[in-house]
Image (tube, rainbow, N blue to C red; front, side, top):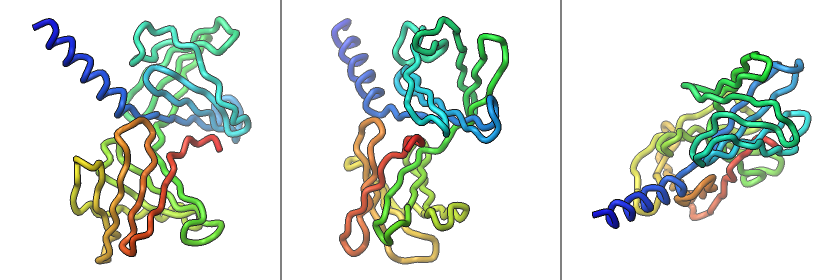
Length: 200
């Protein structure tokens, strides 16, 4: 019985690790006007960068388990920051007691120059990979919600189409952290949407 329980625990832990997604949060104008600060979390690790300094800094986690974040420090500093996730974001309590809210950013994927040179196409996905929005760098405010027609869970893919159109597309991903999305067009072309980390 103990062996079965141990095996089940290992399988579930492996499943959780495979499906873990990096979560990215943003806070604008807190320390300095016009500057956006970013935090990313994945399996207990926490990273920090800003819109003016995109170098990724891995923060030291004081948590005893890899799935929690809790309290963190910057490298070479003893100042402790407390992090707490909430619906729609994350609260950061600074060592001086100030509280800063980081808004949860959507899982975003980009494809550069596939249909037209210089144009970036975007896909945004819900956390469970069941809902997708499409937009381009030419019109970023016009987000089109794609209609999901069917799901092939064994192959980790979804069939979608644009509203009012007959042509269908297959969106597929790998069961691993931060997988890219491959889009199979109706004419057989394959387009890769890379996972966007907001620091390039």
